[in-house]
Length: 222
Ligand SMILES: *[C@@H]1O[C@H](CO)[C@@H](O)[C@H](O)[C@H]1NC(C)=O
Ligand SMILES: *[C@@H]1O[C@H](CO)[C@@H](O)[C@H](O)[C@H]1NC(C)=O
Image (cartoon, rainbow, N blue to C red):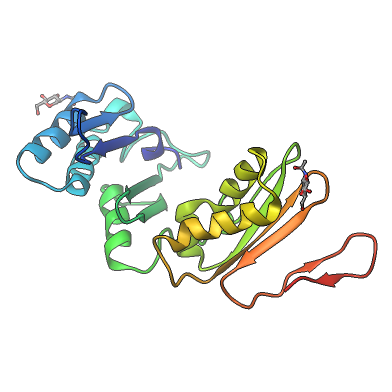
């Protein structure tokens, strides 16, 4: 389950003054992948196409014996592939995990992004930082709602990090949801936040009932 995750690829094409772009950067010394992505950009391909082609080179060349088919097997002896592709302009994400008998995992991830309403095929609940996150030194957060959209923003992780930087639970919850609303104004979702001294808050775009209990009877927040 770790094959393509081990190989990460980023392309920056944003036109920023004074910066030399485009830039292709990837983990490990998989030069053919880097060069393929670069040449794709030079030939006019979109950054997403260039990322996909670069990744596909490693899936075909089985870079380092760890990427793609025949790569490091799991504990049952089977190689399974994971991949993720993300568009930082639109915050669209396509991801796949545990693929068997498929060589072009990044192509499947791209298809998930462009041809389904999903982000990954599981939802956000089992993803640390998306469904929930906790750090006893700071606090914890948990999210519910349209997981396919919310998981792209890791709202629970963001809320905990905001509380680490001094935000109250309420502000942390609000900011985490507004980050999503910036790209998806209609998103339906809710997040609860609590800090290490017992402060708590929530924010939601729907009529979610939140229950909290400290010493008295359980209290309904909204
Ligand atoms: C890179 O591509 C060249 C030309 O196709 C090929 O000969 C070479 O084996 C590739 N490198 C790796 C590490 O696969
Ligand atoms: C926890 O949140 C409350 C507000 O709900 C705030 O007054 C308190 O300072 C926060 N605690 C810490 C450690 O930030």
